[in-house]
Image (tube, rainbow, N blue to C red; front, side):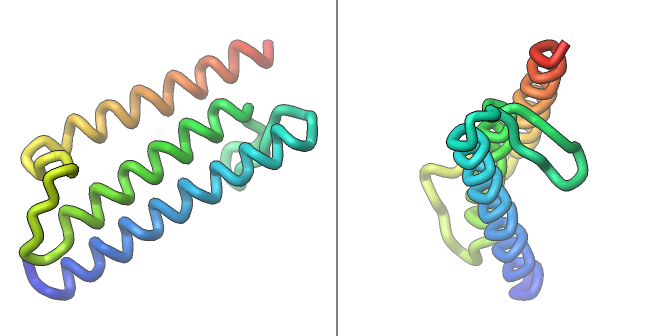
Length: 107
């Protein structure tokens, strides 16, 4: 991996993690406001549990993308790069399940 690709991967990982933290802050605000909902820019109103799932997934994906992009570093707590697809599948299932539960809760 080149230095540029590694640097871009680290930046992408940090941005994913920051997005995850932002989602967690929205969840906290939604809980503290008493409405139990938060507003996402693209999706609209979602429940606090959905915001928490999005936040945790963003932090986890950001950590792994940054860890995989770090040049010459073997991080024992990261999912091996060969198994990246497991992380993506689990993330998609978690987010889809959270959105479906949120939709059922609204009805």
